[in-house]
Image (tube, rainbow, N blue to C red):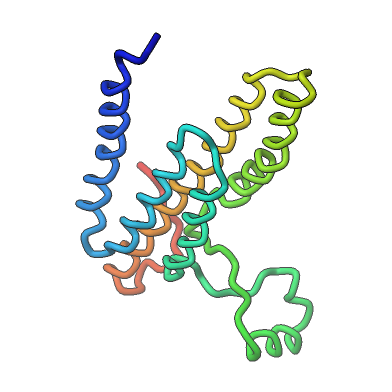
Length: 178
């Protein structure tokens, strides 16, 4: 039914990807690595079929943007001053900084879709008790989780650039959108 429109749909999909790459390249001229990693995220989000390969490559490349992560000790390790001193002298335990605002909901949604995706696929293909809508819905949840992580990373990179331009006088201050 849609074979006649195949080239049209492919062209529209490629224009959609181009519509993200140009603004990323223009906005992140000072940080080209951030633009590349963010475009990897866009490619992982808009895959027609959810796969762990593209998302895994993008999530592993996020550590290239480690300058957007603060190095601090998580609160469960703050039992005493001595333990805190011992742990910080050995190595820093990194957690996500305050620049990343929605990390827990994104990771919880990603875990949710990672666990339910194979179950829905099994119900649809092998057990015959589910249908394609279950699997399609879980791929939308997967893409939503990746989208939340992508927007969170964009905010963190922009916040890092903003703090570095203002040389420390605003570091750690709360940001309000007006």
